[in-house]
Image 1 (cartoon, rainbow, N blue to C red):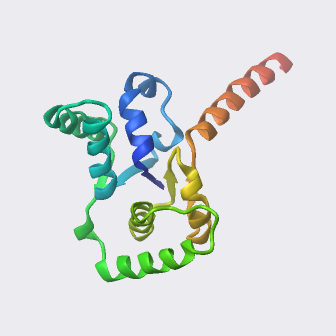
Image 2 (image 1 turned 90 degrees about the horizontal axis):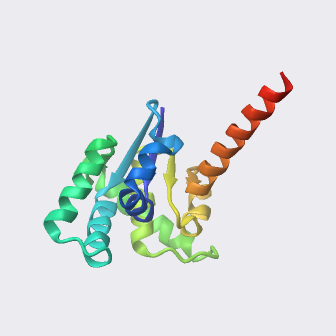
Length: 166
């Protein structure tokens, strides 16, 4: 089973485009896969919905919880993690950050650390630049939505091509 952690940017985009999303679900939402968010992503998403998308607090909270429930996205709670391991991994990532081109902020480091400790296989994000090198370092896959669209188009066209040949 593949476990995918969602970054804030992709979660907001999915919520805002839910009608289109429900038609063309990314691979991570197939039955054999499981999607997760951490508490940091939950808080950031709520903040974006309220401050940038003009939802009031009640509507933003309801929209977020409804989306999570409808698509069976689980929240990783900080209380489920070993805080000492989390702090050690955060320190390690802060040290690693000094030697990479991207300059992910502490929030991105916390997101990737929580997902790693929770056994997440990949992170689904629009902002892959901040996650790519750290993902490689932690042996985690970083996926962007365009990769799914490209794969979907390749599958469609390759099926049509095979049908014409046969």
